[in-house]
View: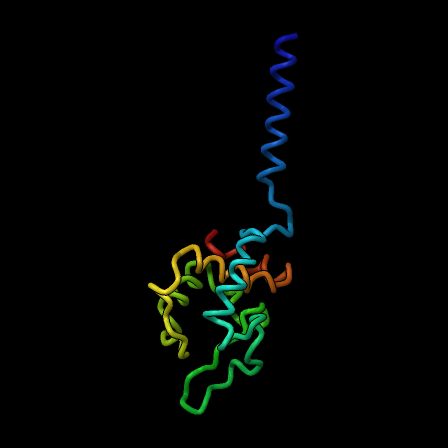
Amino acid sequence: MKKLIIATIVIIFAMGYYFVNAKGDNARWYTKAQATTGKKLFAVNCASCHGLNAEKTVNWRQKLTDGSYPPPPLNGTAHAWHHSFAQLINQIDNGGAQYGGKMPGFRGVLNDEEKKDAISYFQSFWNDKTYKAWYKHSGL
């Protein structure tokens, strides 16, 4: 009887662990709270160029008159989805000059958690297909 009780307790804990930690097909790396915080950070630091809903610049592949590229939309309709998590952080830290753009770097402006929150916000616009394609090579 004692063994049965212990086995039952182990099974219950194992099932609880699974349900708490399992990620379904549509699960994301970030929480809703991170995306909410990210929205505020994005509005202050990113929206003037990328749009409040990460949608700005429809013709992001066309160079501007000065030869630089405009800021791409980050809502899943441009190319941000094919950058790993480390590349997204690098872009935020160092700006866009390395890619032919004019985005300033935010190293020292945003801390690591704020950068993650901003990424979670714009990724919240990505449909599941885009997110899954990104997640496969995200480095997470």
